[in-house]
Length: 361
Image (tube, rainbow, N blue to C red; front, side, top):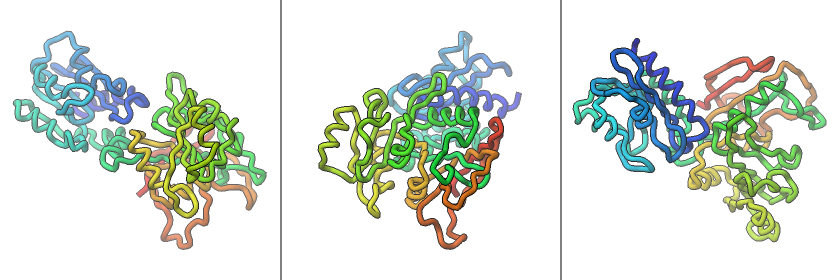
């Protein structure tokens, strides 16, 4: 079986850690001997053993002369666990096939060099793009120190996110709405504007079986959030931040008493400075954010250049109406040449709805 097929199996292993390893990368490993898989492993949870060690522990056979396929360069430093390079060297594995190098400055090719210095053959770049795509969040966070931001919205065929009267339930059907909860599991945080809280009073939790709730971030420059809103009432159970420009107010104390964390962000144009907010959230180890708007926050996020990706659910419906909201509000651009440009990287049917996936160029 060629390298690519074994690496694909390692990728399938890696994805099992989705939503459980942030801010660490998802990693999968496969051990092969005489063209047969003898063990697999993946990074199961943050702080737990890495994929390589889990695969080695899963084998009850001698690994002398075996080949390991791993989606990311093995670590060579002490973190929450010992270096994986040590375990590979001690195991007797003779060849390591690596999908992508690790951009972490503590690794950055050193893991590969250590293996080679100990006589282990290293093959690089097998399914490299797929391995990098799997960990786009990690690659961004480890190099930029700010969250990877994915903008998500559902719209009709004519680009509306609500009717002219403001009604929006429901644009997409059940299967698409269920799919959005897999994104809430994937990303560490979910961010909305105060307008969404006031209009919909959402809970902003993950309802996928076995999923975990993202950290909730509300952009609320003037601290208008209702104290009886669902996000405030459940803040003791689900980590919740309110980013505001207000620094002295009795309401802050009452919100904190309910478990809400207050972020005092810089001001830009009379609103929370989103670039400054990303720096603060990055310091809190929040590596990724699912941005669920609404339209004004989407506009501000694009203008602030914090958006990295977009998930667009399109329903086979038309609302019409010149006053019906579109996914991105604000003033907009003047010249078509100044448009925010994306590259389509995925398209699939979910029931009768379409999911389009884009990366910002």
